[in-house]
Length: 340
Image (tube, rainbow, N blue to C red):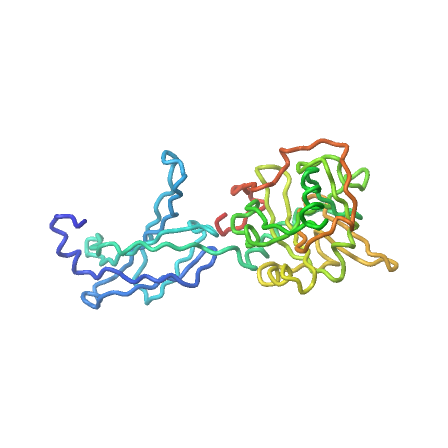
């Protein structure tokens, strides 16, 4: 709706951007291009770009909203790169609209009408961003402790279901949205979660678990060996003092391996700060980092016959569950400077 004030004639002289195109989208930048009528084009000195997070239909209408971000940019040749981690978060839907503007002698602007509103979604963290997370995780990983088994806790019903419906083989499932908001594995990578943490005093897995009273244990070499590749997946905390590192183990050449190769930093299985497999006197020896909680994703099915299932003697500590857990965006230890 056009206003009826005296400035309308001036406003109409500036071309309105149309046919907006967004390209080269990353987790914290994008390129924007549009078309304009040539009339009065030479009067344009600036572009106004209005960028907002797309409204969530379920969001609380009384909650404080993000302040709309209106960028004032000098009129540069298009396409123009919009970059800046202070307002762009990864894997987030945004709306964008554009005005052309002409700066007047008195410092005020004459502006065109707003363009149509375009929607787009920023990308996941790239390998470069994950390498930054990896470096931060390495700082606090701590010394390495020896371990011999991977384990997975679930309810009795889960293991009964695997035996009856899946021919005894645990099947990979899509990873939930826990961890970093920009993680390229959330909602995409299929795998089976395992733990390998040990108690400092016993060298064995803890008897407590957040995930169920029944535990599948499997010798470490059955999942992690020279025929597998190891990848760094994520580093996060949940408003807690302790931190989580997600690692991915993928059999060489498997679909999971191909997925990770394109998106995640690969680790040297024999020499890294989190999880190692080395050979001593012809035997494979395993170590895990002491000061982070490792969540290991194995990307292929695993047959229950390769290990044992038994009831644990400890408690089921639900408060430690990381299912769909949101990362603390204010933690300086595990956040990098590209949004959340």
